[in-house]
Amino acid sequence: MEVCYQLPVLPLDRPVPKHVLSRRGAISFSSSSSLFGAPDPRQLSQRRGAISYDSSDQTALYIRMLACSESTSASSLIPGPGFISAGPVSGRRLRRLLSFQRYLHSSRLLWGTTHLNPLHILDEDYIGQAKCMLERVGSWNFDIFLFDRLTNGNSLVTMTFHLLNQYGLLELFQLDMVKLWRFLVMVQEDYHSLNPYHNAVHAADVTQAMYCYLREPKLAKSLTSCDILLGLLAAATHDLDHPGVNQPFLIKTNHYLAKLYRNSSVLENHHWRSAVGLLRETGLFSHLPAEEGLKMEHQLGSLILATDISRQNEYLGKFRTHLNQDDLCLSNASHRHFILQMALKCADICNPCRPWELSKQWSEKVTQEFFHQGDIEKKHKLEVSPLCDSQRNSMGNIQIGFMTYVVEPLFAEWGRFSDTRLSQTMLGHLGLNKASWGGLVQQERPSSPDELEPSRPASVTMPTPAITESEPESASAVEPTAVTTATATGATNSKEIPQGRKES
Image (cartoon, rainbow, N blue to C red; front, side, top):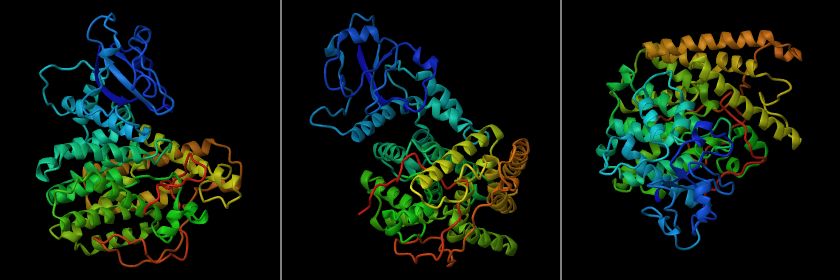
């Protein structure tokens, strides 16, 4: 027996397919018991070829079968390189370590680096299937849910690294691979896996959509390598540490984040600051001149802040004005940055433009978050946010309203800017999906007159200063006079009153 690598097991909230459980050649032990001591040899023979779960911290030690099961001595359980065995290790630190070591190994298979003695690991064929999917990563029909399963729940890390590597950005910006892996693993972990919608899979989906937009002819021939790097990183981190509830909820519960950012782009500011915190913690840009590193952090924030749905009309109005005046010049850095902002906005809410099989799954997930927030608000006797009352809203009406008032106007203008096959495909899917939801609504028996009409997102006035295309909002931004739009991409949470990571 020999330790092959360490990695986290599949999340407990997702059933493990039978074909995975029947795989041969792997044994796992919970980190709380066997990872730091000698396992009972009887466990090896009893657990051959199976996967066990550790409900406390969801980590496991995977072991490769080198020979027959006779070789089951405790001395064979030797931790892999870089394993920390001395002193107490927190569950969070341990999961990061195990995820990181697993990726150091799997990267050899994904990126074609040969190994003198190939290791026959548990999910080698799964990595092979994921690699085949990555060859079609530019397809608008890309199934991110399948990809997440094939990568053992690591779709965001795998997707982002592949795209950065495909563009040659690691070499161009001299990014340290170890620091990059650590950064991506930490980003993935800081998404809340219990959020039905705002989780790492959503971030991976947005990153894949962003890649599709970056390949559009107008952008592909105009964007710089720095633009591409920032666009991909912004997509991967745009909802980092999302608590699963929307901004109005944070404001009316006096959440510390709402106070910190003075009720202005609360979540988006938090996502940006969280991303910057991880960049600095891992030192990913530490080799760059300080001024250049700060500039990249600043531009990253400007992109993430553009995803604030409450400023949708502001960005859309400026985009429409540029198109009407035909004055967009992508050789101009500020214009390129604005187009990146619009591309990220499109990627963030592109689910209704996906094929029905994918779009419907996202609709179910975001509605689940909406209604969960509504249940929390009812429990604590708070005013229920728009679209969050399961007794007054249906999934179909929510989606039709979201498509009509939010998605269609944005993608119609994007189609004017980039009149390509992809744009036509997205608008085609949007129309078909809207018709499908309309048919489902017709089949439902409305329980109240409110359900006869699509649920329109609650549009509320916001202060409309000019958009600073390269300057993100500061934490001291002026407090708006009213709460903002709640849409099908705002969300709810699996936690009662979420308290995100506090920032100093």
